[in-house]
Length: 179
Image 1 (cartoon, rainbow, N blue to C red):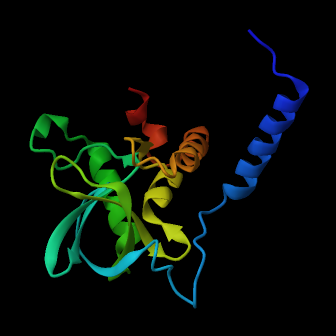
Image 2 (spheres, rainbow, N blue to C red):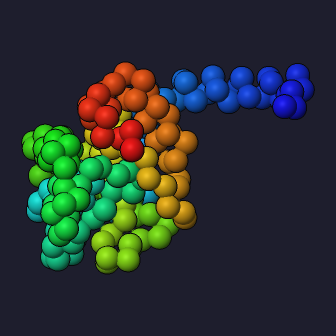
């Protein structure tokens, strides 16, 4: 095993400290009192919560399936019923709870905007300070799922997952993610 040099140790320590400082929340800068039009689209009306990591939004008059980038929740509505698990319903219910008082959300499209099923790939924001994808991870109802090129928040998501796992938050206490 190769030991790190003193400058490498200092850089690693600095990066670790910076990540700890930034780990509390993902804050999105405001411009003129609202969302940065360069980053966000919307607001879009919430039509339906499909499951823990997929929702339907009214985008330009169309009911559009939106897959939350960077997270994966247990299955609850898979066509192959044998893949659906009780924890999938819990994850779906949690997403519903997070959105229950919301009528609309904003989205940040992924670098790759659609998946192979035609769903929009996006980071979903409840407000300027709260990303739904991150909140679900933080609460322990999802694992990180990174598929490049949509890995913009990967380090942040991995940190949230690790904290949830260490705290046995949400579904981490059930063992469903231990597979």
